[in-house]
Image (tube, rainbow, N blue to C red; front, side, top):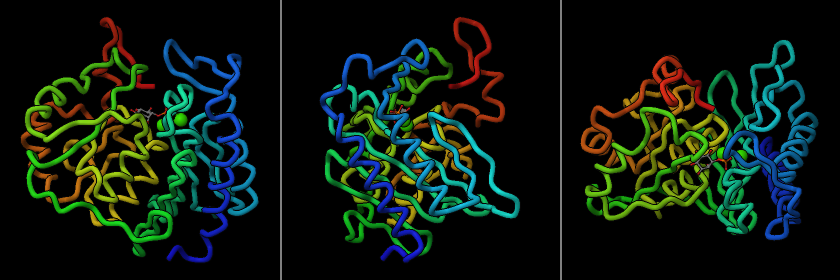
Length: 285
Ligand code: IPD
Ligand code: CA
Ligand code: CA
C-alpha cells in the first residue's frame, strides 16, 4: 500500500486526469499550438501543469517543481525535495483522440525518486510505486514478466519527431533490434510504456533523447515491480543522460549487448557537442 503521506498526491494526480478528460476528444482547433517546428502543446497540458503546481504547493510546501511546460522553480531553503511533472505524456495521442496518454508525477528527495504515479484517465488506469514498498496498478501489486530471451520479448520504443534530425538517432538500434525481438510497438507515451514493462505486458522499452519528466515516475514503477532500468551504457544516468532502457531484468544484458551494441549515444553531459542538425551543433530539446 502507498503510505499515508502520498495518498493526497495520488488523489491530486487523479483530479488532474479528470480535468484532462474534459477536453479529450473534443479539443477546439485553437487549443493546440506548436512549441517548435513539430512539438505540440495544448491548453490542457498547460492547465493540468498549473493545477498540479498549485496542488503541490499546498500538499508539499517548499518542494522544488520541475514541469515540462513551466520549467523549474527552486526549493525553499532546507528542503531537498523536487516534484517532477509531465502534465500530459502522449500529447500527440491526446490531440488525435487516442487514449494512450498519462499524467506523470514523481516526488524526489535527496536526488532519489521516492514516489511515482502515472495516471491514464482515458484508460481508467493508475500505476504508482513507492521506493522500497512496491508497485501497483489500480491498487493491485504488479510485477515484470519472466520472459527469458529477446526472441520471446515484446518491446516498445519512441521516435520523437521533434528530435528526428538529431544524431546519433534511434534507427541503428531499431534496425538491429527489430530482428531480435518478437515485436516492437510505438505506443506514444513513454510513461505508460514503462508501466507496461512494470506490469509484464511489455518485456522492455528503450528510447533516446528522453526527458526526466517522461520517465522519472515510470522508472521507479519498473524498479519496484522487479525490473531493471539503466541508461543505454548500462549505468544509472537515465534521467540526466537522456536515454533509457527498462526491462524485466532477465533481458537487460542481452539487449545492451546485442541490441544497443556500440550505438548508445553519449550521455547528455557530452551530447550537446555531438548532436548535429544539418551540420550545426544542437542541444537536444
Ligand atoms: C513524448 C512521449 C513519447 C516519446 C517522446 C516524448 P510528450 O512525450 O512520451 O512517447 O516518444 O519522446 O517526448 O511530448 O507527449 O509529453
Ligand atoms: Ca512526455
Ligand atoms: Ca508532455
